[in-house]
Image (cartoon, rainbow, N blue to C red; front, side, top):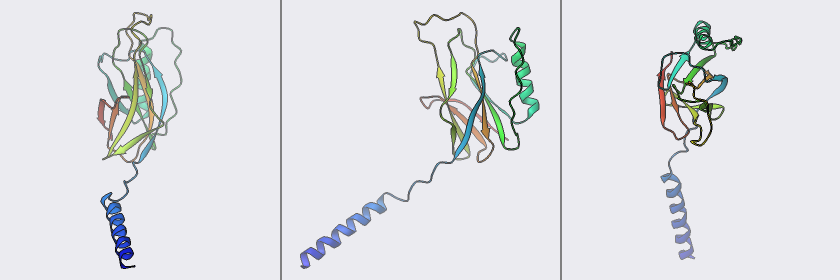
Length: 171
């Protein structure tokens, strides 16, 4: 009987030590809702590299669409997306100039994660396969993403492999 008692106590001690060694449960990573508002491939500026811009008011949003329309002949001006800038901001992500059609960006998932005051937005960069017949025209693929304005001071944009594309500070 004494042998059974010591074996039971030893097993209980080992089980308790094992649970304690794992540490406390990991805190959940906060999520911030992200929604694609618009996308395109028309160039809207002289930038050649990928970049990100935080738009936090209607005037800057209208200015972006005005610059975009200047580069496209015969395009009917779409209405500006409706955004409550008290609750949301707009993140403009550009892939930079590309030599042909067939390039585009897509948002990975409906939310951004927040860690250490940085919202991490995941973007997939799609490139045309080498054997695809594409038009020879300069394009600038871009995405306009609505992002909730709480819980972060910076935004990091990462591609599908986790590589950084851009990092910006937001107000």
